[in-house]
Image (cartoon, rainbow, N blue to C red; front, side):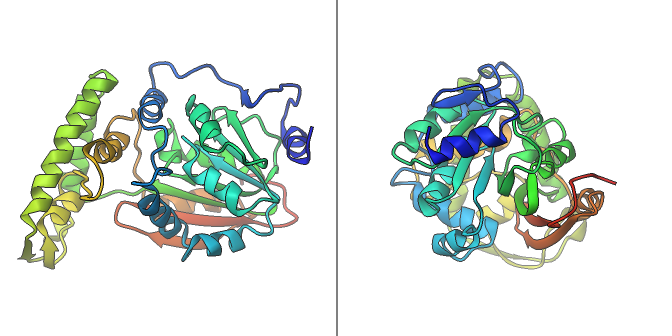
Length: 325
């Protein structure tokens, strides 16, 4: 057993289990995890392959508030244990492990996407994969110096409870960075919910095909390559000024993602990720700050407001135990 195995077993509630991947849940059944199990089975190297990695690395660094991967590595330099909560195929955990070879990086996901993560992370001695539910993680309290959860908490049954579950794992002086969806313009909210309800009645493959059609709709709008100048319509969340037609529809009316340099399959991956999961809660910054305020030992140190979501980073006091008020 090497030093990274020793560190992992030291923070597990029950360290008796052995194996390349530690499993605490069964394979994803129909329900909230089904969409992600299918997505990662279909796209096991998304965000790590040559066509998608550059864009996804840039999006991740922007989302976490770092100018580059080198800046991200420097930010994590003092963390000995790092958790990627909801790691999927490991696209972020694998990069973190490569950037921080002295730290134990744990990728946790409720689905068997951890198998893809293990393949994608081959050769990284400090990467460990755990199949477990972040609502009931198999780790002792205060186990991690740094926790990241990028676009995951809002896909659980209750975002606030998922947040609380992760806070309990923060070590004294540790930090937790998380990205969650935010509420959008009202027409977009209505269309998103309607389409989500509709495709949730479909089998995953059928839903993917529908997302390919939606992606091609986004491509058709993008191909127009036109801008329009509009007045502000505050009640619909439309800002005054010049807008690209596809972006105006995308942000205020309907998510129809399209990126020219990606294949149809890769674009459909993004739209499927948004529409097919059973839960995709959206929140306000004020709401999230109310959750943070319930933990007196937490302090918000970073906030990034993006068109689709929000990133918060909170730090735990070095002496206070994690107990909500």
